[in-house]
Each structure stands twice: as C-alpha cells, then as structure tokens.
Image (cartoon, rainbow, N blue to C red; front, side, top):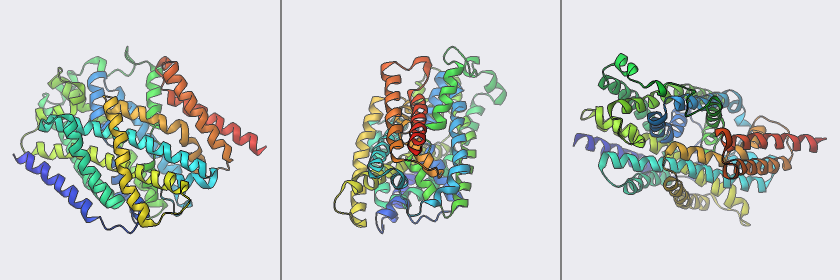
Length: 454
C-alpha cells in the first residue's frame, strides 16, 4: 500500500510539473524553452534523456542472458558523449536561432536536405521512443499485474500529457526530477541486491565464468568491436541530444554539462548491467526481459520498493519525453514548415507540434510490438541516423567547407549499404550493417566534396 502511494504521488507530481509549464509563448519555446540553462541542468536532462529503457532494463536483460559484454560495449556511448563535449559543443553557438538539426543542415545543403533530415530524425526518434514504450509495458506488467498493452497506454498517456502541454520546459523540469530519482534508486538497488546474494565476495564468486568473458562462443572479438562502435556512433547527435546543445546558456556550460553526463554514464551502465547478474543468481529461471523489475520484487522492502519502482519508471519516461518532443520538433520545423507555401505563425506551429506527438506515438508502438528486446529496438533504430545524416551534420558542426551534393551522396551510399548488408547479405561476421553504411557514407561524402571542389 505504501509503495503504491509513493508511485501514484510521483506520477501526480510529474503531471503537475507538465501542467504548470503549459503557458508557452510559441513553437520555439516548445522546442528549446528559453535556451539559458546552466551546466548542471544540461547534465541532468541529457543523462535522463539517454538513460532510458534500453540502457537500463534492456542492458540488465542482455547481461542476464549473455554476460557483461554489453555494459562494456555501452562504454562506447560514454566515449561519444565526451567527444561531443570536447569537439562539438564548443562550436554550437555558431548556429544562433537554431531549434532543430534541420536548422543546422539547411544553410550548407539546402531545403531538400533539411526535409530529408527531418524525416530521418522523426524515424530514429520514433524507434528509440518505441524502446521506451516496450520497457514501460514490461514494468507495469511486473509491478501492477496489468497486461503490457495497458501498461504501455498508462505510461504513454502520462508522458504524452506533460510533454505535449509543457514542451521543452516540462521535459527539462521532469528530467531533473527523474535524474535525481534514478541516480539514487539504481545504485541502491544494486547494493541491496548484492547483499541479498550473500555479500560482494559471494556475489562475485557465483557469477558464471561465461558471463565475464568478453570473447566467447557467443561473440567474437570482431563482433564485440562492432557492438562497441554501434554504441559509439548509433546515437551520436540524434535530435534530442542536439537540442540539449542548443538550450545551454553558453558554450562553456554546454560543454561542461555534456562532459559530466558522459562521465556519469559509464558507472551507471556497469551498475545497471550488474543487476542482470543479480537477477541471474536470485532467480535463473525468470525471463531475461524481466531481470531488472524482478530484482526489485525480490530484494526490496516496503517503502524502498516504491521509491525504486518510481525511479525505474522515471528512467523510461525521461527518455521517452525527450524523443517524443524532438520528433515533433523535427516534423514541424524540418518537414512541414519547408514544404508549406504559406509560413506558419508561432502559435499555429505550436499547435501542430502538439498534434504530431500522436504520429510519433503510433510509429513508436509499431517498433515496440515488432521487436521484443528494448536494446535490440535501439540498435534497429540506429539504421535511420548514422548511415544517413550523421556525417554531413558533423562536417557542418566542425565548420568544414562542403558542397550540397555531398549530402545526397552520403545519404544514398549509407542507406543502400546498410540495407544490402543487413537485409540481403544477412549481416556477415556479426557486423552491424549501419557501421558499414556509416563508413560508406563518410567515403562518399569525402569523395564528392573533393571532386566538386576541384
């Protein structure tokens, strides 16, 4: 009863925060709020955005079934955030007035490139949102005994409400709250789980040797390197993370917030993965997808359970709201606006952005129902970003001189290579197609730029 009260109180608080942020001046405020946040807020909201269902419940599930290789591969993501902090964030103020990735793309590559970018941005946001939706269904199913589809509808309803009403202001405020919850609840759960396993020495001694090996029968060195690169490039500069670069007070605060977010992510990935090992010891017969929720049910006393369940729910919601908001912004700013003959007013654009949340939600539901594991959904969604928009985007952010046709060369080469490698050749050697797609995208981009300049 106490746990239920804590969880309900948390959800009411989130809804209130969203409702209190409802007075928006227009679309730009919906997209990036007032754009003057300090480094600590940026660190919290960025961390809450990427530490979603895939990097928590999905990570624990993969460790339960395959071992600690996945948290180690996820360190590639931590490295990516740090690299962005060092090399990209200091230059982001070179794009004043930007609210989307398309605003950065269009001056260099043209309006058509902006629209293409908006489409791919919406697709990757919908895919990653799908991972969060799948995690919400599993969480509500385990803790409240409701069917996954009902859990999805409840969780999505809350996220859709406050992100639609309050825009980026509501997303940032709830992200800060949710980051505080997750940074307390997940380490607490790990400590209590290790205690339940008999203490640190007993816990470590009982870990199967196969779950500590990086190279094993399940994964070769080449496959591990491929997986590391998947997380290094897969979510680099996806729309919500670009938004976090645009909302900073200045370049110094933006860089510092991104840097510490990357540093914090590394131990979090290891700890959340370790929960999969705890679940394996406490109940090896449970479903791997229920590893993290299962540990909560097995080890936590009354009161603590409500706090940690709220933390787990907040992990998923904080990522879902960010990708939902970014998808709506991309669709309005980079697809609808450029294709209209008559310009949209700020108020009209805001209303359309709120309506487009439903479109993204529908696409996300398809991803959630088609792919069972949330981490696998993430990897599938990466096909829509790194092989297509990433290379041209990074070139512009680094201040390189480019030609318009190089954008189309990169998109075509990356897309064709990814489809060919994954769907037709069946992913030889366990290498993800989007990695080769990104490599070919880069090669085509560089060749066209070199040729056209000459």
